[in-house]
Amino acid sequence: MEDFYSCPVCNSDLKVIDNKFCEIRSELVFNELEFRQYLCEKCKHSCTYHNVPLDIIYKAETALATDRELGDFRKEFIKRNLNLSTIDGLAIEIGGGPGELAEDLRSECGHEKGIVVDFVDRVSFESLNFVHSDLNDCKDHFASSLAEYNIKHKRNIFVLSHVLEHIFKPSELLSVLKEFKNSYFFIEVPDFGVPHSKLDLRYSINCPDHIHYFNSQSFLSLIQNTGFNIIAFERQSSPLVPALRVLCNASDLINSIGDYEEHLQLVSDEIAEIINKHSATHSIYLWGLSAFAAEAIRKTPGKVKGIFDTKYEFDIFQNIHVFKDPVNYNFMHGENPVFICGSTFSVVQEAMRNKLAILSPDYTLLTVPYE
Image (cartoon, rainbow, N blue to C red; front, top):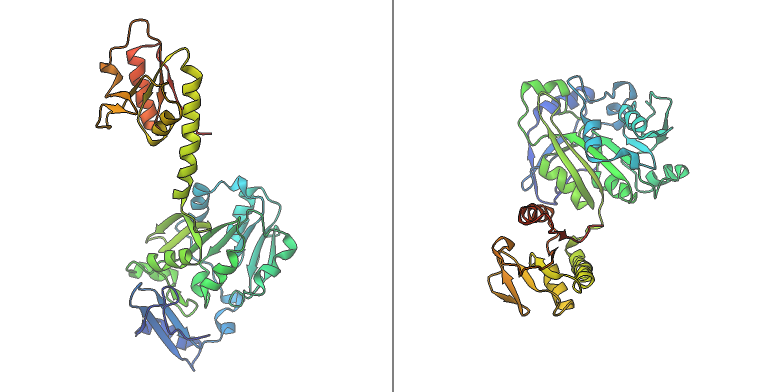
C-alpha cells in the first residue's frame, strides 16, 4: 500500500492526526504495524496508511456485509431515480460479497443473470455469476474480465456499496467504470461528515479495512472530478448506518446552454407557421412577448394584429401595438381572433387558457407542442 502525500480528492495538503481507536484495532491484527491517519486541510477528507497485509484484512470468512438490520433503502433509492426496465445490460455488483443487492436488482430488471465482481468468490445466489478482479489493480484487467458478457455499450447498472472506502485509489476504479458510457452507477460509502455517536459503533466503520473516510464534499467531488454526472444524492443518518449514496452516469461535461440557440430557431419557426396558417382567416394576437415570439414576428411581417404582454414596458414592438391584458382590450364587433401563446412555460399557458375561458368559450389559445 502506498503512502499519501496529498489529498487523493483535491490534491491539497494533508496533516497527520490521531486515530488511536483505529490504530489499536490495526495493531491487534498485525503487531509490526506502521500506521498514519491523515486529514485534508481543505476538503476534510481523511485517509489512512498502514502496512497491514491485505490477506489478513480481507479474509473471506471475516469479510462481513454492512449491517442493514434497521432497514435497507438502497434499492428504493435506485428505483426512485432510475427506470430499471430500461436496463438492457446487466446488474453488476462490485465488491459485492454474497451479492444480495445485485440479486435484488437482477430480479427487478427481469434479467436471467447478474454479476458480482470481487477479489474472492462469496456469491450466494445461483443466478449471479462471479468474476474475479483485483479492484486495487483494475486499469488493465477490469474491463477485460467482463469482455465475454459483451456489455460495454449496453445500459448496465453497476453497484458499489461500501467499496470505495476500501480501495487505494478510488479515482482509478471510477475512471475504468466511466468507460461503460451508457451505464448507471449506484455508489454508497460511510458518512464521516457528521458526528458519530456511540450508537454508530454497531456499524464498525472506523477500521483498518477502510482507507478512505468520506464527507459529502469529498465524496461528491471525487465522483464529479472523475467525470460522472450525479443524478441523485441522499444522506442516510443514524440510527441507520451513516451513509452517503448517489446514482450517477458517465458525463461528457456539457452545458446545455448551447441547446437554446437551436430552440430559438425551431420554436420561432413553429410559431411563425401557426401565424401563417391562420392569418388569412383570423385576427392574430400574440400573447406573451417571449424571445420565441419576437423572433416569429420578425419572420411574419404584417401578420400579427396585436400583442399582449404584462412585462414589456413599451407600447409598440416591431410596429405592432402592445397591450397588457386581453381582459381590458376592446375587440372589434364580429372579429374572429386567434390567440397564439408566445411562452413555452406550461404554468403560463394554463393561466392563459383559464383567462380566455372566462372571456369567451369561443376563444382558443394555440401553443407550440413540446414534441
